[in-house]
Amino acid sequence: HSIRTVPTEAIDGQKPGTSGLRKKTAVFQTHHYLENFIQSIWNGIGGVQGKVLVLGGDGRHFNTQAAQVVLRMAAASGAKKVIVGERALLSTPAASNLIRKRGADGGIILSASHNPGGPEGDFGVKFNSANGGPASESVTAKIYEATRSLTEFHILESQDVGLTAPGTVMLGEMQIEIVDPVADYAEMMAGIFDFDAIRAMFRGGFRMRFDAMHAVTGPYAKAILEDTLGAGPGTVINGTPLPDFGDGHPDPNPIWAKTLMDEMMGDQAPDFGAASDGDGDRNMIVGRHCYVTPSDSLAVLAANATLVPAYAGGLKGVARSMPTSGAVDRVAEALGIDCYETPTGWKFFGNLLDAGRATLCGEESAGTGSDHVREKDGLWAVLFWLNVLARRDLPVADLMTEHWARYGRNFYSRHDYEGVDSDAANGLMDHVRDQLATLPGHSFAGMVVSRADEFAYDDPVDGSRSEGQGLRISFDGGARVVLRLSGTGTEGATLRVYLEKVETDPATFGTDAQQALAPVIAAAEEIAEIATRTGRTAPDVIT
Ligand code: VG1
Ligand code: CO
Image 1 (cartoon, rainbow, N blue to C red):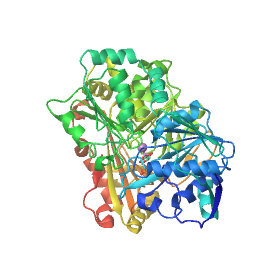
Image 2: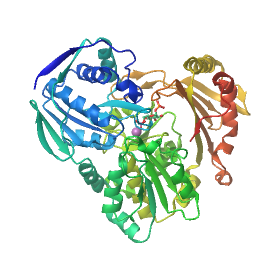
Image 3: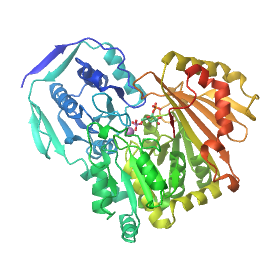
Image 4: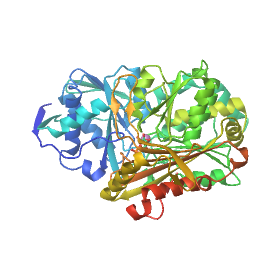
């Protein structure tokens, strides 16, 4: 094998967003685009000479071709070994686990997560560090710097490596170990949860549906839920990973997982429903006739954590992203543990988990996780719920009612405006930013603003500061509006409006969320002029 050094030119816009670099698949397939970015990762982390890496992806279109390029480029730059999932598949949490378990120096995950795939869809590349978590802000900045000054990349000349069966092969001087993508992950889950209790619950007639959305979790869910825990055959639907996710949008929320939602709200609804996203790090939880918001899910898991063997000793602390509702805060208060508020994106939880300050973390976008890995973990959250339900022996709806009765209910919704003209979106954010100092004391839709600012995060572990992390406006009585622009989209701008209102009167708990939030929605419109500035009269997606 000979190593080719290929002259190239820096490509604009290779700046990783909330979670890696995401672009249209066709963009990733243009001349040198992928190669430039991979070389920039190597350069940004100080090279891969002698290093061990993990590699896998969510199976979307271009996954296998891209994996071959990464392998050839790792070999060309002197990597010692790459541990790769069979067929280049690994869910994001499974990759995180492998990096940690094998003491690897880092890993590459080929995924655009919840974004649609296929030739017309999106592709993405994430780099995770030796702790198994997404590259920190400083590492990401170095990688971006490297993309801007790149002049050449190195790649081995070779045929494609066969990745269809476990085993070990050499690529030049580099070893490639092909592993079953599910085995280590399944073993870890068995070590965390009370599998006997869950098994007994299924034996007792408990029925569930898991929608893998034709994305990466299908094989994981089948192996764990059906084969190991005895959930009935057919529990897992859309369980075969497809390059275009069966033309679907692998984002587990009531809009994109509508088939599952319809079943869960119908007469024949099973006891429990769940779904995961493209790369397996998100989760949607829905009981019979009862949708659980991700913010509530985090709070319920925190409140019931000691029912899970791995957390029986209690939680060290909890953390949530800033736009996530404050439901978990009150659980933390009751438990007497710390609650951290971080910017959006899992990379901000890494230090807290590494330092042993937080055990559970979560985001309103259907991400929940713990210190078992350094990523959010979809199937883990589902198993956590099953473990809690097995021990509590209550329908999901009753568990929620009980939870709200004790802690109050944070009505919550996110309104997304997608593909908005970038100038209009930035103009809207500037317009709100300009008002922040003067908003307090003013009243909107009958609510008085108590506080308004732009969120900045000071990491308590490494002292780093991250600014510009979202505009937040709080009202007397605990209502809140947060506005930020998405960092994962690939077309125009996506405006996210996060809406929250706290109620403690049980008589209100049955209210529809949009109805309960009506004044908050009206206040957001009044302050941000969303309709006139975006030209939209309604959000594209309401979750
Ligand atoms: C979104 C979510 C954020 C999540 C990120 C990656 O980011 O809001 O909470 O961490 O996606 O999730 P943004 O910048 O578009 O709001 V995943 O499962 O797509 O890697
Ligand atoms: Co994801």
